[in-house]
Length: 74
Image (cartoon, rainbow, N blue to C red):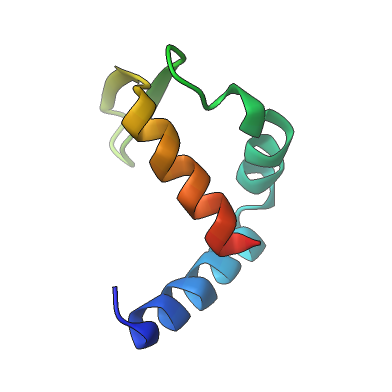
């Protein structure tokens, strides 16, 4: 990612936090749970009411990515 993309990503991430404070609070409160072996589940409910669900088990590589994102955010 080039420096301009990183700056743009940072401002978009900040705006996301302003628009979705509950999500940001949840992630801050539970960031220690993003570790190898944890299972993340994602559920999407469309405006029409359709539900889509998936999950993933965190690997060591996933944990490295989460740590890198934490370092970017400061």
